[in-house]
Image (cartoon, rainbow, N blue to C red):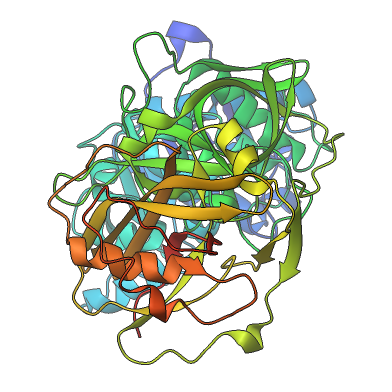
Length: 557
């Protein structure tokens, strides 16, 4: 490790236990940065560079704080040596963590001497320093961070009155900025969200700048582009069973052909919602939360539920639950079965991980899953489903108290799914980036509804069958969200009589909008009598079929 002597401004090299106490500089690179070679040569041309003057000022700051040595990346790393550069990048988090003090130089904040602290705070939050990838670890790793303005006046430290401004500028919870919680306590997705809106000059560096934050070492391969971030995620998987790494929401900016459960870039976590780790939340004692990379791709053993076009995979996480409600997170995939293993790819819809009741695990299936590195399979929608784009002009203008809903069914087994969708008719699957189908229902006073209903279906080739449908709805007034969910529990077998204190009358209201005639677009208004159910009773509705089931909804107008 090379350090600059703050008196002589000369470089000295130290190893291991001989490394002395030192200060460290964090800054954004500008034009005229002084290099290692220029520091060594110390020519007049080098001394006239703005970068040289910046290092000299930093040495003076370190000296006034009682330190004899200073580390600066521009001067202390020989970037002409690829081996040295790789070692430095893999060691940089530790170098910042071991420094006694870090001076964070904000070149675009003129001074910290203003009487108007509010004006200084605005300038700090807008600083370019908070937009760069490398400065993230330089903010989090050191014991003490002192922010300095362009005139080297002190603005404040990481844990003092600046904390709230730093939270706003970075999106990082104050507990991690003040040291109340070590960053090791943050889950994978949270850490990726911290860097999701930052940029680096080299594409690969958006991955390399995170190595220390994840305590990962890996070789640098400049020229690999976005593959660097994929390699970083694979390295994380080798040492962590944190499944929030798979919980990123799909975004329109992503390539349509992206098939991996791993995110294409940190920006995928920009709108990520906080998930809490719950290692025993989904799964039983015989299940382990292990997953690893193989020559076939990412291998994982997880709980799954079937939907018409594929599956949803349960994550070992739980959303921040409202009151005592237990909710689990699931991500959608397309899949092909090969010799008892599901070969899967990420499905683009629904874009957000699904929030479902923990009760869904009772009817889920435990499967070995492999996410292929190369998508060499056909993923066309099969089983009689016809793809249909829903024109935006068909979306109705909803009146007050109405909600627009999107839908699809969940099945407790593959056999039930095949039995349900095979027949003499084709089921139309309307696809839109936001919804699969829309309808509007008036539900002005429901805060939560949950229960089961039995619905009768007349099939052209298979005769009459009964399906047990679980339907639930919960409205989160504080977050302004409503969560609908449902599942098919069984076929030709009445379900147990669930009663979770739900508003039973609303089950009838929901079920009425689930039932449709084959050739009509309006709802079964005349089915009200048949749907006036007690939970668990049969509902013999002739010549009808379940066309779609509630799974998603917007907030009311």
